Amino acid sequence: MTKQADFYDAPAHDYLRYWDGRDYENASEQAAIRRLLHGRRFGHAADIGGGYGRLCVLLQEFADQVTLAEPSSRQLDIAATFLADHPRIEHRRMQADALAFEDGSLDLLTMIRVMHHLPEPGGEFAEIGRVLRPGGTAVIEVANLAHARNRVRYLLRGQRIPHLPVDIRSPENRHDEEIAFVNHNPHTVIEQLARAGLRAERVLSVSNLRSTTLKKVLSHRVHLAAEVACQQVLARTFFGPSVFLLLRKD
Image 1 (cartoon, one colour):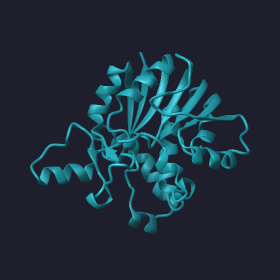
Image 2: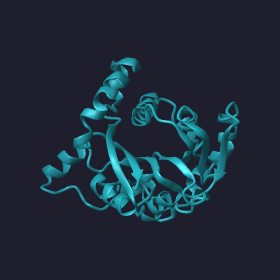
Image 3: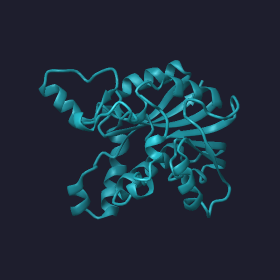
C-alpha cells in the first residue's frame, strides 16, 4: 500500500476541520505529551507526519527549535496559515521513511496519528533511530489493536490479539489504491522499536474515555480530568485506543 500523502492532498480531505468536535481527543493527546515531557528541555524537535502543525505549538514549550515534517503539500499549505503566528516553526515536506535530517541531529521526535498508516513500520523506525542523537527522545503514538473492547471481542471468539497489524476498514471502504489504515499490537511495536535501538521508558493509555455519550453528559473539563487520571493507571493494560510510548535512543 502507498505511503504517499495523496489522500491528505485531496481537496475533499480537510484535516483542520477533522478536529471540529474532537476537543476531547486533541486535549487528551496534548495532556499525554505534556506528561511524558514534563520538566525536560530539548534543542531541536521535529513532529513527523504532523499535518498542519496541530502539535507543533505545544512542542515549542519543550524545544528551542521545532520542525513540522509532513509529506502532504496540502497540509503544509494549511500549516502556513495555522502557524502564521509562530514564524520560528519550520515547515518541511518529507516522508517518515526518508527523513531529510542529518544523522543524530534531533533531540526530540514525535510521531502522532501516523502509525495507523504504516502496516510495516520498520523503515520509519530505522529513520527515527538514524536522525535522533544518542540519548535522544521520541514520543510515538500507536493505534492500539489490543484496546479493552477489542480484547473482549477476541476473547468471545476464542482468539488471541493478532501479533501483526490488522486493517480496520470495512470491506466496502477498502481499496488497494488507498492509504493503509491499520491497528497495531503494542507489544509487537515495542519489539520493533527495540530492534531499531529505541527503548520504551514509559507508556500511557490515551483517549480512554472516547465516547459520544460521555461528551454529551460531561463537561469538557470533567471529561478531560477523568481522562488524565486514567492515562497512567490504565497504561499497563493498554486499555485505550491509543498508546503513547516515551522512547530513548540507546
